[in-house]
Length: 159
Image 1 (tube, rainbow, N blue to C red):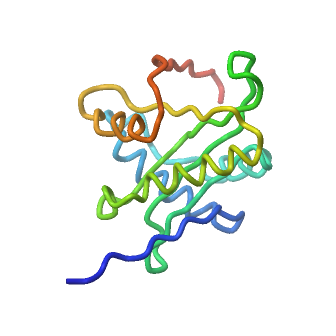
Image 2: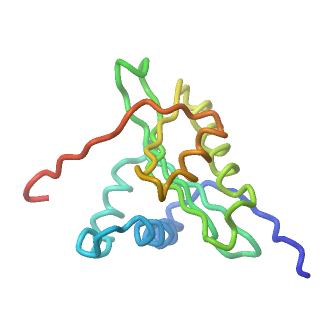
């Protein structure tokens, strides 16, 4: 039996952004309930938006034996209710064959370290609703996250 691969967590560099997008596409394919909701990423626009976000955007990659097996993206926000600046974990994906091996927890730890270094008081994350995603919610709760309520979305026309 082959020994489990050592997992390395590193902040994604600008040159890694295509890999970040590839891994997030895997996440979106898993989350997709209706095929028409996700028709692929507008990669050129997203890459430009990530560049424009500067240091407010960060991504961390998990690598095993030179293969990218996980990603976490987060963005800095500011709100009065949060006491100022805080982080939002926007995407977290671990390849199925590497789940339940601590990879997600290590990515969260990298986000916590990053946030603490930036002076954030909190990290927020939205987990998908429904019974199919209870495991995800339990994962976050085991890491200390607490449920604070649902999130709603409004699509803006013309974008």
